[in-house]
Length: 226
Image 1 (cartoon, rainbow, N blue to C red):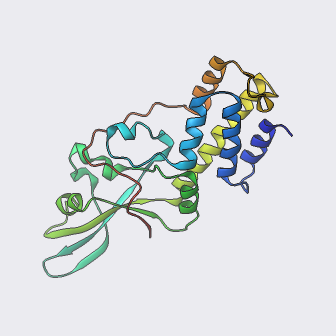
Image 2 (tube, rainbow, N blue to C red):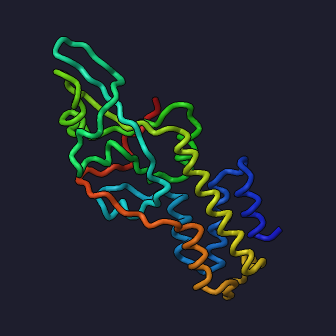
Image 3 (cartoon, rainbow, N blue to C red):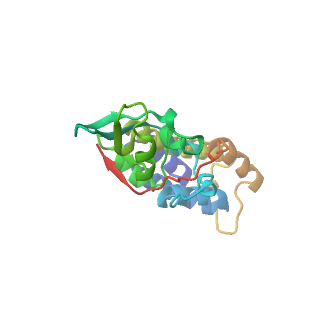
């Protein structure tokens, strides 16, 4: 079986770990002499790093940005506590609105798989200052002691499936150009570079990501399950 057929078979078999599929894809990237594809594979395997500002947001593919609900821990002056209160994101200033709407997930794909396997929602904590300042909006005489984003496991499964589907599409289109591309010798160019780039743009890099403007960045810290 050729490398391209191995990738196709692995990508279509849910029992094959996505990291295994990606490692096969990295071999293909090297044999195609395509650094863009190799870089994407490396980021999926190793993560996109900590996100600390708008420039970092630009590195994250749009399929790793997922919608969220926000809940929080509220307390009033009488000492009553509400530990899972819905938080209203429309109270957030525009520069912080992202915290009420979306979650950015830069972790290695293996971590995404592990989180997706849980039946519980993923929690991503708001910065404490943000929660205290804006979390109690709409709740009379309450204080917000903490807030967090809730990410559905289904959204995490969607990330993994997207990666799997894009690798499959890429392998199929490369095979249409040259069925033996995955067996190329180190000094060979099995598919013209410009053709590989075109295929990449239509399969792997399908969208352009526009970063939000914000002074508070999300990262891979502060995760838990609930």
